[in-house]
Length: 188
Image (tube, rainbow, N blue to C red; front, side, top):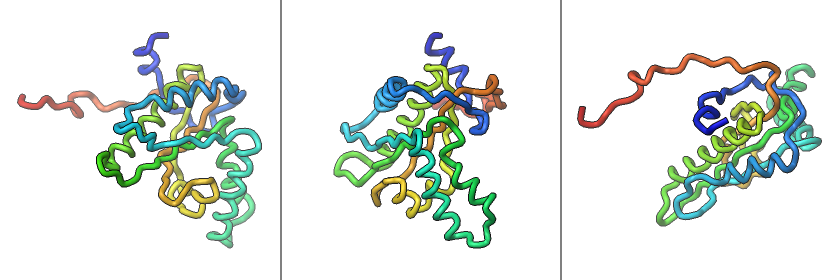
């Protein structure tokens, strides 16, 4: 498939509709290599990746569930189980971490955009390998205790958790805005 057709067919797939098998270690390495080939003013690599695979998915879910349970003491076991399963809903989850920081020359905003580009390249690479994805953040991406439990430093933030698996069925498209509504030409 050529690159334009690949980009035209990319769709987000609901996380519960992602199934195994998970990508191989070689495929994960390919995806991460492609994800790291993004515009990066100053060669700062203002992003990094956390691979949640195998038992690591369950350990991450346990950490999230513990925080949720502490904050919601009346939550029943079914609700806590939902939180425990956050990283087990897809065969593979890759966290894209923004390491944007003050710099004498490179604005933080450009660094944040670079992390977003890394996430999108990861999504595109997974699609090219025949996988489907869903890029989400969810509550724990904004909870400092959860971020610490997942191994993020104090200055780091989650750009997204990319859930990766095989689609159970062909993904459906959603309505897209007509270009006439989102494109202007300067000077016209």
